[in-house]
Length: 254
Image (tube, rainbow, N blue to C red; front, side, top):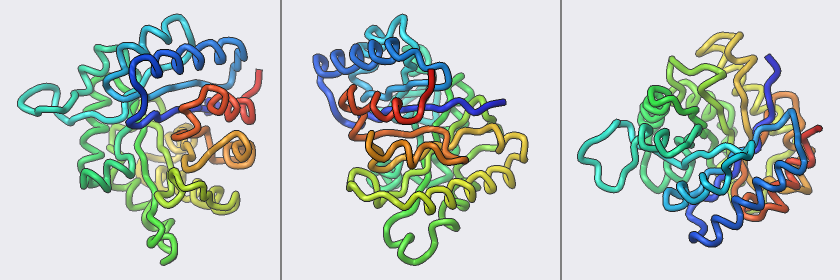
């Protein structure tokens, strides 16, 4: 199985209805114009825009995803959204374990694992985020931290069909800082080895591993064309269709 490049946009807490509609339409139009056959596109807007963006993407090859989900299917969880609700709305992906959720909402790897399991049960593909902080990096713990997060965050039912891993060094998210190409290659290789240890070589060879953290059109070719990098989870650059598609232009082929 050839790993198909995934260019995913995480809009985070950005966009009102008019902005979100315009951005989704632009992404859908530009993706259609390019007609890349070896790339898959995904946008993950905030909950308030999911329905609007779904309509804007209709008929395009851009998938819809959410930025988080609860572990339960329903119940007394005020302010939360279940994977089943996301599936019902038209989502095919959901991000779990983003570093901002881990830090701001104190989410543990055990909880991230439960969310991924619930997403799988609802028929969603889980994008499981991992990555080290700057202090962990400075202490030489990058590989150990990422391997531990793979071990604890990835459920045993994970397959290449229902799971994507996103490596995002916390210190590089929205900072303009990026690791070296050699660093990214080393960490992604270690992540694939950790997946192999947990799920077996066959699954590891097919599972996509994205890189995220200050990816932009100018550095996308270097970062996303590495052997064990299968696309990007794009933050700030996903808020402009020209930047988002510029990243795709650097790595996708017709």
